[in-house]
Image (tube, rainbow, N blue to C red; front, top):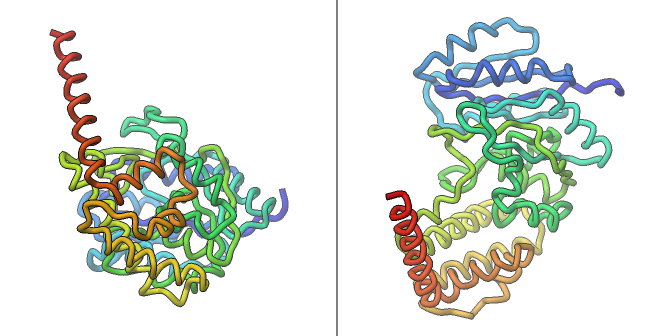
Length: 336
């Protein structure tokens, strides 16, 4: 292997006592050895600090303790501001890194001359048992990744780049920072991927490099909460609310976008505002098409019905709910 560049690994911790030590050891045992782990603890109330103190003084670890709880977005922003070297990676406190994660992503970056590399993940439960071999296939992201990989649409409508798999170049931090504030739906990894994609090159490794742990305390996980709603109106409300906030934030940072996306940002915000209280609307369907044209046909049609034909969506939702209830009743009768 060529001479290794130093990579800064950014780890934000908060009440992570259960899995933190396993994660840290998985990083320290990487086949790629030239890295520095920069940790910021956000006023943990459990034994996280005690665990971190075991690593205090380690030549590859630098630890900061926040004086007050600032939240995970500000904690990652703090870490991004402390990147020293030309390359950095993001890290979650409860995952496990496969031993060649750094080596593989670094090699891909060199091969593709990319500015950001991300990978697939293997989903595990709290006990380390595999739930799904591929996160991106389980979440039906692989089609979107394939279609938009080398475009600025890779993280535009929704994020397809999972933060804990990222290796990225420091040079784009001026574009990325500061992170958006007062947002429920835009998180640090999606913003990093979006801002980098606007002028940089993205590369993808279609295999897992992380054991991605799902447990009750996950802030972001492998679920789609909107589909657990009891009412169709609640699903539609969430769909529209997410996109209204997304494009509101984009408009706040409009100068960061190229001209074609500046225009699309404006039209998309108007589109989602206009359909919010409509029972049926085909006006502006071309904006919908521009936003969703990279999706699977089934996803495209489903979203078109939800957003533009809510009366039909309500009927289909009730049929689906009734069928699901009938199927559950049949299963219960069989068990009885």
